[in-house]
Amino acid sequence: MKENIIPHEYQISTEDRRQKNGHNSFLIWFTGLSGSGKSTIANVVEQKLFQQGIKTYSLDGDNIRNGINKDLTFSPEDRTENIRRIAETANLMVEAGLVVLAAFVSPYKKDRQNIRNIVKDVNFVEVYINTSIEECERRDVKGLYKKARAGEIKNMTGISAPYEAPDNPEIEIKTENETVEAAAQRIVDYIALKLKL
Ligand SMILES: Nc1ncnc2c1ncn2[C@@H]1O[C@H](COP(=O)(O)OS(=O)(=O)O)[C@@H](OP(=O)(O)O)[C@H]1O
Ligand SMILES: Nc1ncnc2c1ncn2[C@@H]1O[C@H](COP(=O)(O)OP(=O)(O)O)[C@@H](O)[C@H]1O
Image 1 (cartoon, protein in one colour):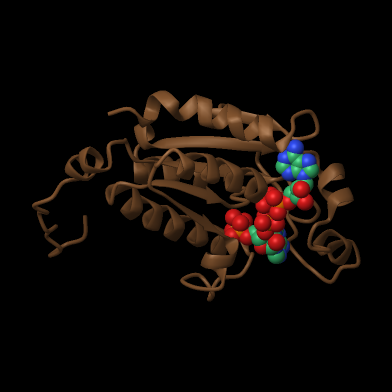
Image 2: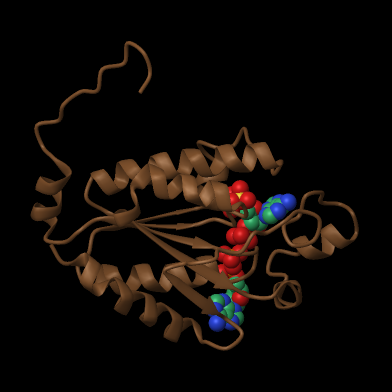
């Protein structure tokens, strides 16, 4: 806690908000290489939860790196700051009673551990979208791998910057062996108990 910053005590607690919504709130964090399938799977999970009447919100590169984090690059230091700000933002949303889905490359173990610390272990579900770099490069959804191979993009994760795979993610999806629908359903099934008050 910073000196001379005294936290305000809210009259309406996170618990009150969860009760009102009729479900728990927590963060589902998707990590994996660019093109691994994070956004595709997260979108289907959110649709399924939304249809069940769960209050959700998604954070992804487009609404973050073009907005609050538009000052950040892909250097290791900026990626760390990117993830820290997203984690703090997600934490506010979890406190507001939402199930938050976040899809970011988040290549560093220490940064993902920091998210766990910020939102607290019990509110954190780490989903590792495990797709080989060869497959991501074959998909090359945004043409970034081609540019990276041509030397037009520096620090491309998986090519010229590291990706540190999680050791013990709550869920691991191997997209080369599992369909989008099956993966999304497995995640929804996993969190069913967690949603209950
Ligand atoms: N150098 C480099 N390395 C990795 N990714 C790159 C890079 N440059 C641009 N992009 C595009 O930016 C998206 C990743 O942004 P993130 O905020 O998720 O990255 S990080 O968590 O801070 O590492 C990532 O989006 P996704 O494909 O959705 O993962 C890429 O499209
Ligand atoms: N089993 C699968 N799971 C997720 N995506 C898949 C799968 N099989 C093929 N894909 C394709 O891979 C691409 C993944 O892109 P995207 O979801 O944008 O990845 P990311 O958000 O990780 O960058 C999409 O074009 C998607 O249709």
